[in-house]
Length: 199
Image 1 (cartoon, rainbow, N blue to C red):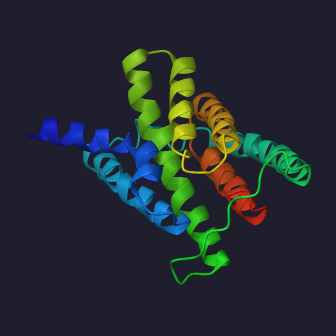
Image 2 (image 1 turned 90 degrees about the vertical axis):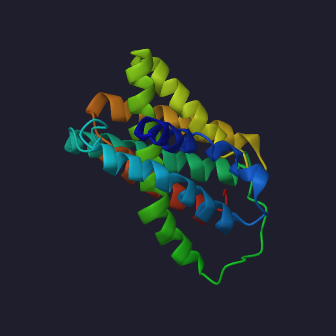
Image 3 (image 1 turned 120 degrees about the vertical axis):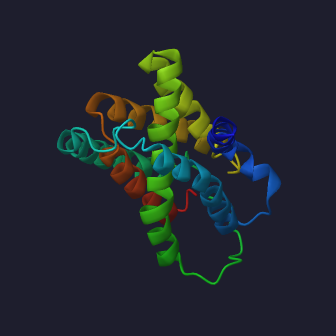
């Protein structure tokens, strides 16, 4: 019974890419629904005591240094691409929840980004790498699924860009054996994408 439950919990992590097809056109509801989908995975991490296995601390200082350089470079590139209209503006959606933009930024930086990193660069990377025993493929596959998890955005450019970001964060997680840098980078770049109205 325990093995079946574990498989169900882990499988629930991989259905995030279909979120955009099954819920209404509200950005906030999508974030909340995606977070709810991640709860079984977090329970699994806690129950199986796999925090050490997913290496969430590792060489965190080097991870942060790498991420600072990457965030600065990526931010400049995002602002430039946005000004040139290469990165399209998000379609304006009416807020269905009574929360401010600032509260959305806080929710994203403190909840959504860390949860996504625990799922994609933590638990998913751990299981894929354990199964295939090839880190480059694990980085690619988890990044591909990470990109697909953003399929609900109106532009495929966003999906492609999140795939590229996933590659960088996957490399960082592998090289420094840490999720600290990817969590920080994901939070900053995600909030900047909100401010620039990319997402």
